[in-house]
Length: 344
Image 1 (cartoon, rainbow, N blue to C red):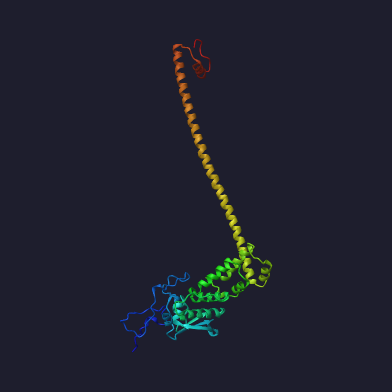
Image 2 (image 1 turned 180 degrees about the vertical axis):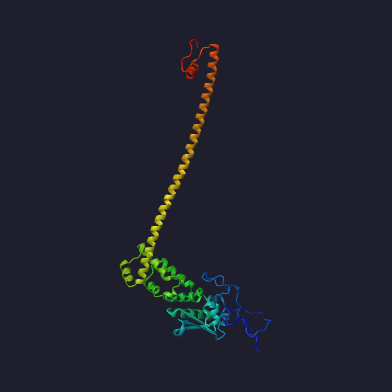
């Protein structure tokens, strides 16, 4: 008959260790780690939907060492198939807690193997696992790792990204990227970046592309202090030279496109300004025209009323043989086309 396992929730296939009750009144053969709710990983690079990811640096030493309680190990291979070589091994409990990609990385009959591309640098994986073990065996809450060499820090971060453990190396990676973007990068650091295996410089890091774009910007702005030495160095680094040339060519195309867009925006602004002035002119002159029409209509109405009055007076004097005045005489000549009769 199978015996009950007080750590049934913490099988090697379980993604995260679950704490059991710590009530002193309950007797247990072995106490599980007391994982605090504050142990959520603070790194922005971790998928926030995976709420079971814990930051080992916030655990106490007893809880961290508890992850090494069994000999269930995960083997990390370089390559796959019969030519695969073991890089290192790590506790499966520790791997499940530290990696946010454990369910998709673990393969094999017992799900205790991880296969990475054959052209990676295995030193990055070894440095990463060494850092994890430093965190596990730290006497108190383990702080962030301190930087070593540029290449070691970058290759370790690349390995961490591939294994889903970037929260433990992200700060060092961002520190190096800030140095690359805000200061003139040294030739040693350029060599370190160019030495990274292409398969490890994933789209989430793009270290080489970032450095190439920064150097291309420095070339455009004439910030390189030793242009001749830099040109001589690029002759020995064809990949970087091509990347800088491509970046500057892309910038030139983008610059021309931006100039075209700027001209189009200027043209549209002038067109809008002309249309606005045209509307104002039409409105202003329309008001003047309307006022002129009203004045002309009033003038013609006044003239017609005056002519009507003069015509009525003229006809009355014709009947009564009265004397025409100047306006009545003109009205008579206008109507009959001849001078008025004598006596009028």
